[in-house]
Image 1: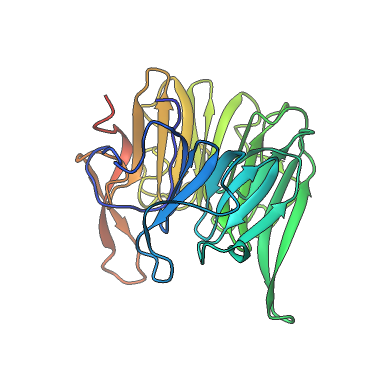
Image 2: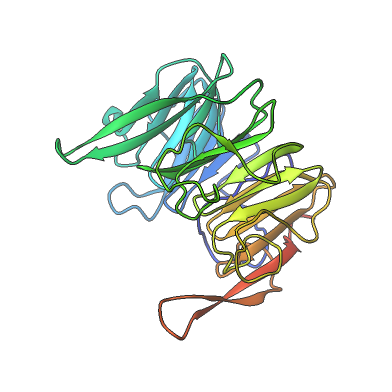
Length: 322
């Protein structure tokens, strides 16, 4: 089990199940609630069976991504790839060149985990991008920004978001630093602006962090084999500390040791351990934690009768992987 990836909601399941569309030539997978994409033989292939305009039930070669694809990623609007060191993204609206946007023309070494909103350049820098709507011109505008304030080798980079919303974290030579949208207060008391630059340390995780994963509402990091999470509301147990509300601080996830990789999605989190176990916690309404065992969490809805949702306040092991 070389990698761990998480994304948006999918089909209801109670255990990990094989996907018969993906064969042994697949090197990477990128998913969102809209589509499934894979990296096969240096090319990008995607399926989006429920798309009303361009339904594709089988994995289909995306024009412009037929060779020299090195890495792939996805958010809720775009599927992206590093192609001959350029970052390009496909919006799924057609199979014509007009549906492909060149975000950064050259010099990209690797993409961020999570959403492909950021990338590490060949010179070691970090660039992030967004597509923002200009009301006065009634059109979208691509914004690419160099992230300053990071130092040395970028050991882990994760981002989340789409359009104007964006949040990202990086582990550099000095430690963990984050920036971007602070809507769910993942940056603590910092103002809630869209970019929130330069990157700032997260209290309690300034040093010793080896990996980080972000989502717009919450984030998790690995420090000395243990997992720590922060941000969000924790209504669904996504912070893994067993407390049904967020206290605003970084909390340790109970029951995870020797973590090697971390991933987060909307309302849930997962970790891959050194002994190849996958543990997940948080929202389990659609089987995100891969286990039938669950608690019941209450999601506020503005009325007295909060919505009861299956969840896991503590990590459970994903069934079907061992």
